[in-house]
Image (cartoon, rainbow, N blue to C red; front, side, top):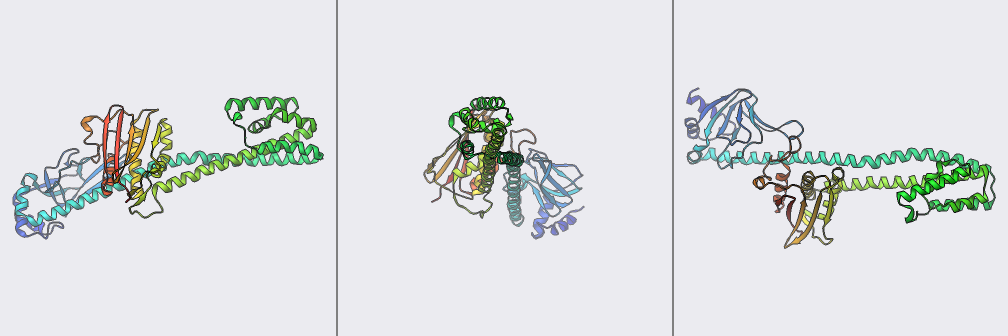
Length: 463
């Protein structure tokens, strides 16, 4: 292909076609026409591009694996410009940039950029705008992907947290149905016994004790087991089904009160009375268990709603940092328990509100605390503290993990840089933290030595 053909193709190029013909001629005179076969690497992972790519035909793609299979980050087709551009920082790609179709590009070596800036001002301006658009696209893609990853973590933790109380409600409901049937049968037997008012009064004494709060002394597991054994022995002695021992042991009923009842009621009537009382005690206990489980589910849903700000517009407003961190810890509770991690929180009640988008600020806490959990050993400790500083609020998240090696501390906020194993880290979390805080005129810094790593977040306080 001769120079005139290339100039004609540049005149039809979607990005650079509007530039003057003399600038097209300069590109052709100083550029090199390259052809890439399918599978050829345009720019290798971790290496900086050597030249500007003016794509004439074909397609090449940047993909990476963020733990859920290969994912396309960006692609360049005919009419696009890619690789290194004037005034760019020359960042290296997180993975190989590969041709997925036979691709033709006119390439300009980056060493010629000073001359190109001088000789081709229109093209240079177009390339600067393209670079800004590319950076915006990368930012949007990274933030969207990191939000999806965090959403996956949140959903996984929430499913685990909801499973326990939901299962408890189901089990309790089934037990309640069986117990209600047993209570009705015992009530019919008790009614058939035609007890006197005095006998009914003695039964009512124990029924009242079943409904009263249990004394503190009977709350320990050992004391509860001893009480159940003693009541079971008493029931066996009187020829009564021992299944009622467990429910009665959970109440303030004593052997003395049972003896008082036996002195008033005997035989089949005593057996019916005990079974009716035990069923009533058990149903009250089940009712309390269902209420506790349902309250836990309500609290979890409220935490999700507070964490995600799902009912709020994404605008800056006064944000309660204490509530945000509390909701975040609720979301991460399952992961904390799995590693037996202890978390201490020291946030004063008068901590000023931050001026921020609540959902984005919670994204910061999620990433930093989640990273701390990954860093600490089993049984480790994480400390969260905060205090006002001038017109800002400073939050410190400290862990007792192995620390960040000094030689990589300057890179941990770079996109796609991660020290975690394949499939365990995206390398986006801290980059997202940095960018979200910059958007709020805040900042994040880190101090790390073996056994102690502290991230410091500074965010403007609400005026």
